[in-house]
Length: 144
Image (cartoon, rainbow, N blue to C red; front, side, top):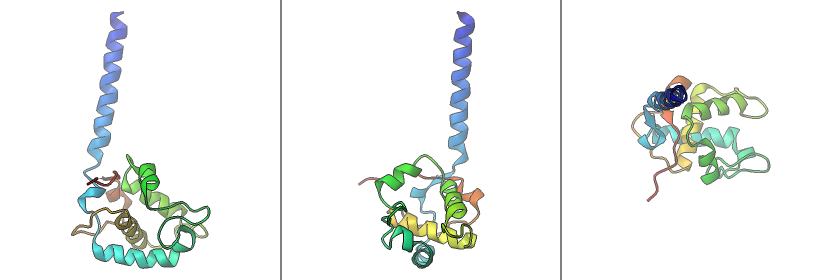
């Protein structure tokens, strides 16, 4: 009985430590202003050229392409990192030629998606290197 108790406590400590490690990996969140207004403006242009045909001009989805704004989009990504979203976009979009855009163009489009979802802008552009955006937690926007 004592061994089982020790094993349970040890397992709980390992799980707690792992959870702490995941939280420690993210140093900021999308609520911290991780893109600039100029970057989102460039992203809007890139989105119109490369994404709007499927995702709609208002990012609300079009046919089989999902919406990139709203509660469902946010809940699908909440708890993950911005880097995971960036990788998904880079590796799968545009559907007819994934990866055709530059990393900077993908970062600009992601900045536009953040702006369209009401996330605040900041003073520094979203870095196009995924290893940096993996340190940014994707969380629901602050409610008023």
